[in-house]
Length: 577
Image (tube, rainbow, N blue to C red):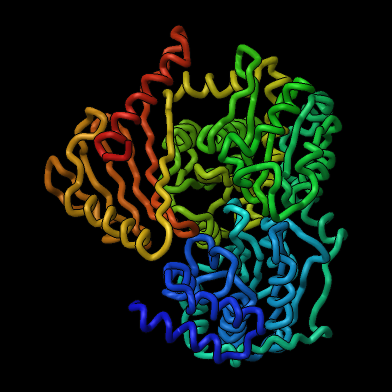
């Protein structure tokens, strides 16, 4: 969009029925000689990506504010009214601890109710997975959660869900966006709510959700035996502060230490740089507490409690952080092992992972003769698969490398509350075996091979950054690498064109996946390198996965270092370091 068009768009906002403070901010952007902030605020409208509507809070069409939230909700309302013209429409709403989340949730409730739609809104902040559960439990046609997940404090967002409890996918995502885009003026948004159509959800609903989590437990007797193992938990100022401890207590644990400094919900996240359990810094306080109490397990969840990061003690008694692939592999191994021991298999069970998640999970599933499906990145694709297979095959569990896991299908999004419960149960199980979680991980490597994964993210801000990311993907497509880390590249999978190319034979094979801007390179030795622009942040992400046979007689760290060096070599070949 040219600068003249951007200025015109900003002036259209000035002429719309917005508050005087917002108009003052826009005038300031227009009068500033440096137009960078103006451009970034208005050069496009926020779009639904893999995580819905998400962006920096502020004024403008490319920012999260009460008007973009209102416009998105009006578009959602219009779409719902067109799709369900003769039946009652109910929508559930939740919000996290971020700044303005309650304000944005109230605006969402008001716009929906103003359009004659019944609203169920939680009395206070609640985890995203509970919102997903509420949609199906209450028979809602849709749902909304106000959150920016693990993004920095400047961000907020708007995740919209469909009647199956999953985030919007085709055709509904495009349908809602079409309705939003057809709103040409903010005067078309009805902000005047109808309180008679708004119902408040409280603690009695929490109990229904927690009961379903309790039903996931596979070894209640083992938990009872090891109920006093010390567990440290941090909500990182988010929504897990109440429900994670309650879930752990409900399944039988009674020695839970919550990090006090991070227990109070706070959208400024004062004790961390980023409220992201993928970042080691975010777990520093939890690790300190873990050392103090000699915890067997340390866990931390992100602000909306759909992701969880964990730390365990290694054989030297030092706490180490596990990555999302390692935690996911432990969970899947445990679930499948217990399902087998309890004779629960009927022959139609399956697990799910994403295309950038470790192949170790597939190896584990194969050993239990259980199907392992791949989906695109984004839990909405896992939820879509669960919906498609409902009544035909049985979902056990699944997850993705970015610390998101799902056990059972009563929730249709990643669920850190349920994941914390099953991970704690895993800790009790290993204690019962007189081993540690770390030792169990090494046993998995010994059985299936040593896998090592790494994520490299490049942040590119604004319009110029988006163009740079687009060019990087174009260059990789047009001139794919021939050698990566000393290994010959065997094939390239382009999820945008839906084609897989074998470089040795020249053969092109069509893949059965939805279109997505992702590239994967597979080497002859089995290394997997993926490039994907983020759908929720101004980033391009590179995922690296390498593997080798694990020699239990050799020092684990030495073997891991060799794999790390291979990834460093691959990064150099891609000019990322």
